[in-house]
Length: 238
Image 1 (cartoon, one colour):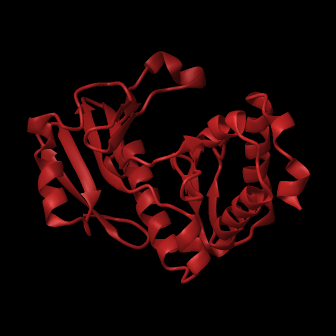
Image 2: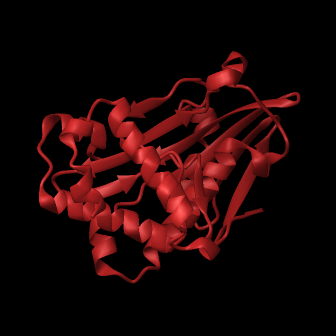
């Protein structure tokens, strides 16, 4: 059993493979997760990311970037709890706990949670490869939405409120870019995804440095995607 800040993770080992999932998962989904290695439902043998519209799940496979790109999708194994898929699973679980416990009706009506299904790790000697499987979220990534639509005052207000809620609860995503925010224009709900670089530190609520770093990353993504002219930063940051 692997502890998170507010819950725990169950790990099952099959030879050199591990399936990890939230201990609070329903029995019917647990059976589905455990049978996935044989059924191939989550395509864990496939080293690519995919979106499956039939079973409602998405899979993220971890790949190296930057100076370590030559290692492709291999990482040094330093224990299950220190693998990227398990660390991100912990972040999703704890993020959901905090958002659900705010007791704020506006938060519940505005922020839609992306539910983690399981993490998968395959150990190869001193190395490993890994994936995380998540529930599919309807909507467009924020960069796609901005390209196709004018942003209303309500969207700016909702986005600003969502960022405030994260900071007030000590939640900081240091990879906060437009592709990691999903907006559903039918429900007007916002979802945050990709928690690989998420930090949850309840002792640093509304931390000015951390908040500034997150906002700086978000602003940089607007520029990198050539969307800064379609986003009113002053209206958002006021």
